[in-house]
Length: 281
Image (cartoon, rainbow, N blue to C red):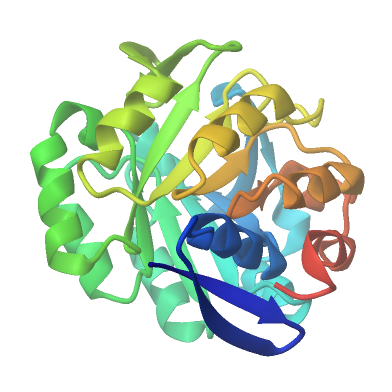
Protein backbone atom coordinates (compact mmCIF):
# COMPACT_ATOMS: atom_id res chain seq x y z
CA UNK A 1 0.00 0.00 0.00
CA UNK A 2 1.22 3.51 -0.83
CA UNK A 3 0.15 6.56 1.17
CA UNK A 4 -0.86 9.84 -0.44
CA UNK A 5 -1.79 13.19 1.03
CA UNK A 6 -5.17 14.69 0.24
CA UNK A 7 -5.68 18.44 0.61
CA UNK A 8 -9.19 19.92 0.61
CA UNK A 9 -9.28 23.56 1.59
CA UNK A 10 -7.62 23.79 5.00
CA UNK A 11 -8.00 20.06 5.70
CA UNK A 12 -5.12 17.68 5.15
CA UNK A 13 -5.78 13.95 5.18
CA UNK A 14 -4.09 10.68 4.25
CA UNK A 15 -5.39 7.88 2.06
CA UNK A 16 -3.85 4.69 0.70
CA UNK A 17 -3.74 3.40 -2.85
CA UNK A 18 -2.60 -0.03 -3.83
CA UNK A 19 -2.04 0.98 -7.44
CA UNK A 20 -0.09 4.20 -6.95
CA UNK A 21 1.24 6.56 -4.38
CA UNK A 22 0.90 10.06 -5.82
CA UNK A 23 2.60 11.46 -2.73
CA UNK A 24 5.43 13.11 -4.59
CA UNK A 25 3.13 14.95 -6.99
CA UNK A 26 0.90 16.07 -4.14
CA UNK A 27 3.79 17.41 -2.12
CA UNK A 28 4.89 19.40 -5.15
CA UNK A 29 1.41 20.85 -5.55
CA UNK A 30 1.30 21.78 -1.89
CA UNK A 31 4.72 23.43 -2.14
CA UNK A 32 3.44 25.53 -5.03
CA UNK A 33 0.40 26.54 -2.96
CA UNK A 34 2.71 28.05 -0.37
CA UNK A 35 3.84 30.62 -2.92
CA UNK A 36 7.08 31.69 -4.48
CA UNK A 37 9.57 33.31 -2.11
CA UNK A 38 10.57 36.85 -3.04
CA UNK A 39 14.09 37.69 -1.87
CA UNK A 40 15.05 41.37 -2.10
CA UNK A 41 18.77 41.67 -2.78
CA UNK A 42 21.25 43.90 -1.02
CA UNK A 43 24.64 43.81 -2.76
CA UNK A 44 27.23 45.48 -0.53
CA UNK A 45 30.44 47.12 -1.70
CA UNK A 46 32.43 49.05 0.90
CA UNK A 47 29.32 49.30 3.06
CA UNK A 48 27.15 50.73 0.29
CA UNK A 49 24.34 49.19 -1.72
CA UNK A 50 25.31 48.64 -5.34
CA UNK A 51 24.28 46.76 -8.43
CA UNK A 52 26.67 45.45 -11.04
CA UNK A 53 25.87 44.44 -14.59
CA UNK A 54 26.90 40.87 -15.37
CA UNK A 55 29.17 40.98 -12.32
CA UNK A 56 31.47 43.53 -13.96
CA UNK A 57 32.89 46.12 -11.53
CA UNK A 58 33.30 48.54 -14.45
CA UNK A 59 29.54 48.85 -14.55
CA UNK A 60 28.85 49.40 -10.87
CA UNK A 61 25.97 51.63 -9.82
CA UNK A 62 25.66 52.94 -6.26
CA UNK A 63 22.25 53.35 -4.66
CA UNK A 64 23.18 55.67 -1.81
CA UNK A 65 19.91 57.54 -2.31
CA UNK A 66 18.04 54.45 -1.10
CA UNK A 67 19.60 54.79 2.35
CA UNK A 68 22.00 52.85 4.50
CA UNK A 69 21.87 49.06 4.09
CA UNK A 70 20.04 48.56 7.40
CA UNK A 71 17.48 51.19 6.41
CA UNK A 72 16.88 49.56 3.06
CA UNK A 73 16.57 46.13 4.69
CA UNK A 74 14.02 47.48 7.15
CA UNK A 75 12.06 48.97 4.28
CA UNK A 76 11.83 45.63 2.48
CA UNK A 77 10.71 43.99 5.71
CA UNK A 78 8.01 46.60 6.27
CA UNK A 79 6.79 45.94 2.75
CA UNK A 80 6.45 42.21 3.41
CA UNK A 81 9.78 40.44 2.85
CA UNK A 82 10.48 37.58 5.24
CA UNK A 83 13.91 36.70 3.89
CA UNK A 84 16.69 38.91 2.49
CA UNK A 85 19.49 38.04 0.08
CA UNK A 86 22.77 39.79 0.90
CA UNK A 87 25.86 39.59 -1.30
CA UNK A 88 29.26 40.71 -0.04
CA UNK A 89 30.60 42.17 -3.26
CA UNK A 90 33.70 43.46 -1.51
CA UNK A 91 34.71 39.94 -0.52
CA UNK A 92 33.81 38.59 -3.95
CA UNK A 93 36.05 41.13 -5.65
CA UNK A 94 38.91 40.83 -3.15
CA UNK A 95 38.32 44.33 -1.76
CA UNK A 96 37.97 43.52 1.92
CA UNK A 97 34.59 42.49 3.28
CA UNK A 98 31.35 43.69 4.83
CA UNK A 99 31.17 40.91 7.40
CA UNK A 100 30.72 43.07 10.50
CA UNK A 101 27.99 45.10 8.80
CA UNK A 102 26.19 41.96 7.67
CA UNK A 103 26.31 40.38 11.13
CA UNK A 104 25.08 43.61 12.71
CA UNK A 105 22.18 43.57 10.28
CA UNK A 106 21.39 39.94 11.05
CA UNK A 107 21.29 40.69 14.77
CA UNK A 108 19.02 43.68 14.32
CA UNK A 109 16.54 42.33 11.80
CA UNK A 110 13.53 40.11 12.40
CA UNK A 111 13.75 38.01 9.23
CA UNK A 112 15.99 35.33 7.80
CA UNK A 113 19.18 36.42 6.07
CA UNK A 114 20.97 34.44 3.39
CA UNK A 115 24.48 35.55 2.51
CA UNK A 116 26.74 34.87 -0.44
CA UNK A 117 29.81 36.31 -2.04
CA UNK A 118 33.38 35.14 -1.62
CA UNK A 119 32.80 32.56 1.14
CA UNK A 120 35.69 30.30 0.20
CA UNK A 121 36.91 28.71 3.43
CA UNK A 122 35.35 26.59 6.14
CA UNK A 123 36.18 28.98 8.96
CA UNK A 124 34.28 31.89 7.39
CA UNK A 125 31.32 29.67 6.53
CA UNK A 126 31.03 28.32 10.07
CA UNK A 127 31.52 31.77 11.60
CA UNK A 128 28.60 33.19 9.64
CA UNK A 129 26.31 30.26 10.37
CA UNK A 130 27.02 30.43 14.09
CA UNK A 131 26.36 34.15 14.32
CA UNK A 132 22.88 34.55 13.02
CA UNK A 133 23.06 34.00 9.27
CA UNK A 134 20.28 31.62 8.32
CA UNK A 135 21.79 30.38 5.06
CA UNK A 136 25.09 30.79 3.25
CA UNK A 137 25.60 30.44 -0.49
CA UNK A 138 28.72 28.68 -1.69
CA UNK A 139 30.03 28.75 -5.24
CA UNK A 140 33.78 28.38 -5.61
CA UNK A 141 34.25 26.36 -2.42
CA UNK A 142 31.43 23.96 -3.30
CA UNK A 143 33.09 23.06 -6.60
CA UNK A 144 36.70 23.11 -5.44
CA UNK A 145 36.28 21.64 -1.94
CA UNK A 146 33.02 19.65 -1.91
CA UNK A 147 33.98 17.68 1.19
CA UNK A 148 33.76 20.87 3.23
CA UNK A 149 30.33 21.50 1.73
CA UNK A 150 29.16 18.10 2.91
CA UNK A 151 30.64 18.69 6.36
CA UNK A 152 28.77 21.98 6.67
CA UNK A 153 25.49 20.32 5.70
CA UNK A 154 26.09 17.52 8.19
CA UNK A 155 26.91 19.97 10.98
CA UNK A 156 24.32 22.70 10.34
CA UNK A 157 21.55 21.12 8.25
CA UNK A 158 20.57 21.09 4.59
CA UNK A 159 18.48 24.26 4.90
CA UNK A 160 21.51 26.31 5.99
CA UNK A 161 23.72 25.87 2.91
CA UNK A 162 22.98 26.59 -0.76
CA UNK A 163 25.12 26.05 -3.84
CA UNK A 164 25.46 28.82 -6.42
CA UNK A 165 25.03 27.69 -10.02
CA UNK A 166 26.19 30.75 -11.96
CA UNK A 167 26.14 29.94 -15.66
CA UNK A 168 26.95 31.80 -18.85
CA UNK A 169 24.95 31.28 -22.02
CA UNK A 170 22.08 28.87 -22.49
CA UNK A 171 23.31 25.45 -21.58
CA UNK A 172 26.65 27.01 -20.69
CA UNK A 173 29.11 25.95 -18.06
CA UNK A 174 28.99 26.97 -14.42
CA UNK A 175 31.46 29.71 -13.48
CA UNK A 176 33.28 30.32 -10.18
CA UNK A 177 35.88 32.72 -8.73
CA UNK A 178 33.66 35.76 -9.00
CA UNK A 179 32.38 34.64 -12.41
CA UNK A 180 35.89 34.75 -13.85
CA UNK A 181 36.68 31.03 -14.16
CA UNK A 182 34.79 28.41 -16.14
CA UNK A 183 34.28 24.96 -14.71
CA UNK A 184 33.72 21.78 -16.70
CA UNK A 185 30.25 21.41 -15.19
CA UNK A 186 26.93 22.08 -16.87
CA UNK A 187 24.07 23.11 -14.61
CA UNK A 188 22.42 19.70 -14.90
CA UNK A 189 25.69 17.89 -14.13
CA UNK A 190 26.25 20.07 -11.07
CA UNK A 191 22.71 19.46 -9.81
CA UNK A 192 23.15 15.72 -10.13
CA UNK A 193 26.49 15.79 -8.32
CA UNK A 194 25.45 18.01 -5.43
CA UNK A 195 22.18 16.18 -4.93
CA UNK A 196 24.26 13.19 -3.83
CA UNK A 197 25.99 15.47 -1.33
CA UNK A 198 22.67 16.27 0.30
CA UNK A 199 22.35 19.80 -1.10
CA UNK A 200 18.73 20.94 -1.18
CA UNK A 201 19.01 24.67 -2.00
CA UNK A 202 20.45 26.15 -5.21
CA UNK A 203 20.85 29.70 -6.48
CA UNK A 204 20.54 29.60 -10.27
CA UNK A 205 21.92 32.77 -11.88
CA UNK A 206 22.19 33.70 -15.53
CA UNK A 207 25.37 35.76 -15.68
CA UNK A 208 24.47 37.14 -19.11
CA UNK A 209 21.25 38.61 -17.71
CA UNK A 210 22.30 39.63 -14.22
CA UNK A 211 21.70 43.33 -13.65
CA UNK A 212 20.42 43.87 -17.20
CA UNK A 213 16.65 43.81 -16.58
CA UNK A 214 16.30 42.13 -19.98
CA UNK A 215 14.18 39.28 -18.69
CA UNK A 216 14.80 35.98 -16.97
CA UNK A 217 16.21 32.95 -18.76
CA UNK A 218 12.88 31.19 -18.42
CA UNK A 219 13.93 28.33 -20.69
CA UNK A 220 16.79 27.25 -18.43
CA UNK A 221 14.80 27.86 -15.25
CA UNK A 222 11.90 25.77 -16.54
CA UNK A 223 14.19 22.94 -17.59
CA UNK A 224 15.96 22.90 -14.23
CA UNK A 225 12.67 23.12 -12.32
CA UNK A 226 11.17 20.21 -14.25
CA UNK A 227 14.19 18.02 -13.55
CA UNK A 228 14.64 19.07 -9.92
CA UNK A 229 11.22 19.02 -8.28
CA UNK A 230 12.62 17.75 -5.00
CA UNK A 231 15.16 20.59 -4.80
CA UNK A 232 14.67 24.23 -3.85
CA UNK A 233 15.68 26.42 -6.78
CA UNK A 234 16.10 30.19 -6.37
CA UNK A 235 16.21 31.99 -9.73
CA UNK A 236 18.20 35.14 -10.36
CA UNK A 237 19.32 37.37 -13.19
CA UNK A 238 17.45 39.75 -15.46
CA UNK A 239 13.95 39.98 -14.03
CA UNK A 240 12.23 43.12 -15.26
CA UNK A 241 8.46 42.89 -14.81
CA UNK A 242 5.83 41.44 -12.52
CA UNK A 243 4.41 39.01 -15.06
CA UNK A 244 7.70 37.09 -14.97
CA UNK A 245 7.07 36.41 -11.30
CA UNK A 246 3.65 35.01 -12.14
CA UNK A 247 5.29 32.67 -14.64
CA UNK A 248 7.88 31.55 -12.11
CA UNK A 249 5.22 30.89 -9.48
CA UNK A 250 3.75 28.21 -11.73
CA UNK A 251 7.09 26.44 -12.23
CA UNK A 252 7.27 25.13 -8.68
CA UNK A 253 10.61 26.70 -7.79
CA UNK A 254 11.37 27.98 -4.30
CA UNK A 255 12.11 31.65 -4.91
CA UNK A 256 13.43 34.50 -7.00
CA UNK A 257 15.95 37.26 -6.31
CA UNK A 258 14.84 40.83 -6.98
CA UNK A 259 17.64 43.36 -7.30
CA UNK A 260 17.93 46.14 -9.83
CA UNK A 261 14.25 45.94 -10.78
CA UNK A 262 13.38 46.95 -7.20
CA UNK A 263 15.93 49.73 -6.96
CA UNK A 264 15.02 51.12 -10.38
CA UNK A 265 11.29 51.02 -9.51
CA UNK A 266 10.50 48.62 -12.33
CA UNK A 267 8.77 46.32 -9.85
CA UNK A 268 7.32 47.14 -6.44
CA UNK A 269 7.83 44.59 -3.70
CA UNK A 270 4.10 44.66 -2.95
CA UNK A 271 3.25 43.74 -6.54
CA UNK A 272 5.94 41.06 -6.58
CA UNK A 273 4.60 39.44 -3.42
CA UNK A 274 1.06 39.49 -4.79
CA UNK A 275 2.17 37.85 -8.04
CA UNK A 276 4.16 35.26 -6.11
CA UNK A 277 1.28 33.94 -4.10
CA UNK A 278 -1.55 35.96 -2.74
CA UNK A 279 0.14 39.06 -1.44
CA UNK A 280 2.53 37.69 1.15
CA UNK A 281 5.66 35.58 1.24
